[in-house]
Amino acid sequence: MAANTDAVDPFRAIELPDGSDPVSKGIVRRIRSADGTITVEVAIDGLGEDLAERIVEQIRGAALALPDADHVRIRPVRDADKDIDLPSVDHVLAVASAKGGVGKTTVAVALARTLSVRGHDVGLFDADIYGPNVPHLLSDVEGPVLTNDHGQPVPLETDDGLQVLSPGVVGGEAPTARRGAIAYGAVENLLGQGAWDDRDVLIIDMPAGTDDVAGAALEHVPVDGAVFVTTPFDASVDDTHRTVDLFEEHGVAPVAAVVNMNGFDCECCGARNRLFEDPVDLEVPAVHELPFDRDFQSDPGGEDAPAEITALADGVESFVDDVLEAVPEGTLDLRGLPPASQVRQLSDELAAVEDGATVSAVVEDPTQVRDAVRADAAPLLAATERKGLNTTGGLLELTRA
Image (cartoon, rainbow, N blue to C red; front, top):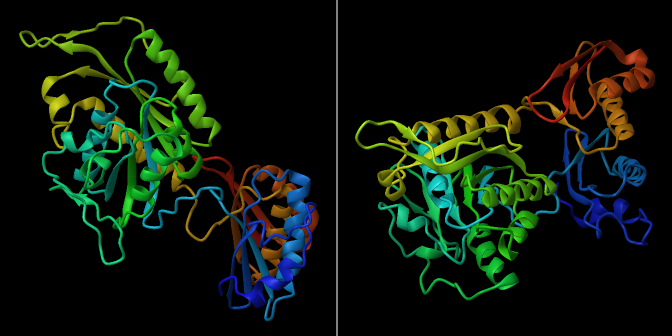
């Protein structure tokens, strides 16, 4: 059930330290009921462990007061503070640069097309409100963007199924004079209201630097990971270090970096000529060096992409498969709940299943939680097992006696 008046009344009775309640404060996000299980989605980021634990347990008690509540499941909401909802998109990846003119859009287009020709459903959004260059690199898309019956902008589609939205193909002149909130509002309206088909990955070509639009996008768009593009010049690399730190501060994982135009292949002998000898050191999982190539710069296609772009696409696929989709189906993701609330939830789950059944959950510290569950619900436990995941936290499996 949705959060209707009858359902939220018990939660409105909970008084927070500032005098408000969890519903009006946006802590209780959604309430669902199915077969006697009440699931409450909560947003408790930034509350502090002690306060979050107290509120979660009060919410658990309030949920038990609802009609037909045999079992309560509290689920933490991720990206709870993100204003843009992209329900048809599985994962969002940003391609960012500290400076303009380093080839960020070229890399974004090449990566999007490469993933698309590999069979992924890919979207490409041009967030560079001041210089939307994505349409210039895609010869098989032509605007203007039209709207559907609901007034949503409909993405253009390339021959290989890549969906594209850009301020450069929206009717009227590009809003290059807009600044601050007005400029970001134009990006938000086009991205958030876009009528995207189901997409495995949405790649966002970010504006260069960390201006108002880029900063606001990090605040409001649920970006999962980022690819950083730089040249090998010292100033560009130093600025890129700071850009990587900025994205990590906003919870965006670094996927890889592309060092663009650090050389060229001789047209006579084919030898690689490097312009800078010192390797670029960035704190990201992989760094790919991309030489200058006239044909690639003008037409960064997918099937004929350079080996460096192919390797980058491999890394993105691994990031999506091994990191973002590492939680097995049917497993509770309790990361974000206070440790004591994780233990309470797992004890309740064990009490609700049949003998011999297994309860699986992902938690930040599986050893700590396992030991606490043993102390809290020892008579219910027949076996415990921990497994590593290629993601933050670990998998904990508890079998009821």
